[in-house]
Length: 369
Image: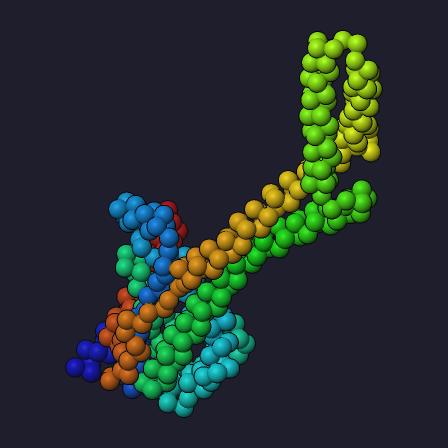
């Protein structure tokens, strides 16, 4: 048997060196030296109370073959495998010690002899050992954490789920603040407009020395109406007197009274209209300012209702991270996959060997030609 093996090695030196030897080395490594690695798995879903239009749109997308996962779900999904999450675990969970343990073999631990020691090197290692997958149909996220100790895997997975929940809470706070801040800004602007027009009204009252020219003109209008009534009565009496006693001395008295009444009416009407100091321009400008104030009061009322609506809407759109399954404590090691890894090594090296043989064969044929 030894002779046959020796003969085969001599005849197939290249095959043994490039295919058999790496395969045997990898088999020895995975069988003897490779450290067991444990995977803790957790599942969660990000949900929120969205408005009816968003629900209808999501239904249309699902009917058309789209997934039910929201943008918020993708944000949480990306966060657990982000640099921020890795740095958080380094600070709070001492994840570096979990991968630098003496229980890990020289090739699998971090740092090792062939990798760097910077955070970026650790992050690349972290991305291989912390995997988050999203089922776009159901919106369920699956988190897998792999370390060299079952308790460490569960502890880190639980810390990541907690970090994801904290992220959702921060997103809720930002969303609520942005929604309410926009409404409150509009309310403050409306209040400022109302305050400005009230200052204009006060300044105008000081300018014309009247609180309300519209109301203060009412007594003058009543006096004019009373004078006109007196004029009408006097004219009727004068006409009756002229018919009954044409030569009565009272006729001149009534005529002089009518002249005096007409003069008084004209003088009173000049206070209402006819000049810049009359009531009409004062009333017109005052009513214009009052009309602006009425509009701004309605705007303030609408903006105040908008703030209350925005707060209610912000509460309705809150996001929630619901845990479907909590991080488990693995009973046995899920890695390494010794047989699969050895098969990959064999297939890879055998493929390279065949390519090399084809290239060598092609070069020989070309040389002969």
